[in-house]
Image (tube, rainbow, N blue to C red; front, side, top):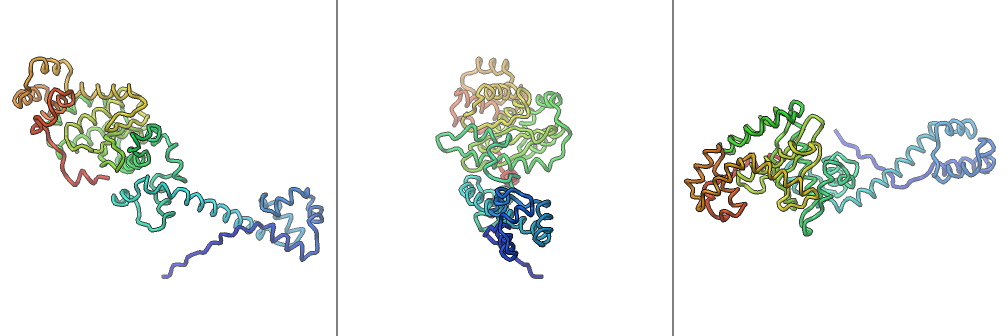
Amino acid sequence: MGISNELHSDLAVPPGEYLEEVLEELGWTKKELSQRLERPAPKLSQIFNGKKAITPQTALQLEDVVGVPAHIWLRLEDEYRLVLARNAERAQLEQEQKLITRFCYAELLKRGVLDKVTRAIDKVKALRRFFNVSSLMLVSSIDRYAPAFRLGASGGKRSAEATAAWLQLGVLQAEGVDTPSYNKRKLERLIPKLPPLSRQTPDSFLPQLKELLAEVGVVLVIVPHLPKTYVQGATFALSSAKRIVMLSLRYRWADILWFSLLHELGHLVLHQSRETYLDFEQEVSHSAELEHEADRFAADTLIPPEEYSSFTEQTEYYSATEIRAFAGMINVHPGIVVGRLQHEKLLRHQWRNELRSKIIGASIEHTA
């Protein structure tokens, strides 16, 4: 079966030009037409030059006065306005072509969320469908992505557009997950039960985390970072009934995953859960206080502060044996203790890494 390609004219011809031809055939002047229609000449002039549309009422009057059926005038008007709109749309598409690379079209194509097209304007259209917007210029004004643009770039390296694309990948993943309505109290009761899961392997604890969080209306999605995002995690509302926690696994250490997870959950517990919170490699947030609060929540949830204080006061060398014993006492993976000690510069970053575990697996890398 053949496919016909409909051709569209780029030339916008106002129906007023055809009306002038009709008047010429009738031997009338524009003044005479205005008298017969009982319309002021200036308003009629706007119809001739295309500035004023022919309405159904005007079309019916023209049918009576000049003998051309009303549906013809309305068709000519529709075609004229459509050509104007199409030309304006083409100009807008051409303007948005500069955003194709910024919104990571090539990377999104690799991840299978966009159809492969050749023309630049078709790439723009594909990105519009990806974000569900009528113009890529609107992405920065949508509440979910706006924080990425407000935070701006870090030394010219961080891309707000790439960060928005990363967030949308999380949205697409989370939309397919059915959950009951988000329940903050149930989440608060669940959180203390999560750190012990860190003693399991990532292949074991990740599915459990997703299942447990889904039961309280929180969708956990793992979306590898996009170039120039430098993002580690994010939290935002998909709807009034569903919250999303995104992790990028930018660093493959399991203890960093756990800290990032509890940091994002801290935002849900401590702060407005419908806001978008972004956790970058280097803090650039305009709400640094909120980020510090989420950091504290994560640190204290993973390692109770009193126990940690006692451990660090009584230990100087932090041997593997001591770390394992302390981790066993508080029921978390030893790598979480190592990560905390390294972060606070009580251990050099190259020490005791044998106690930490890494997340490896194509199934995790390509969940987007």
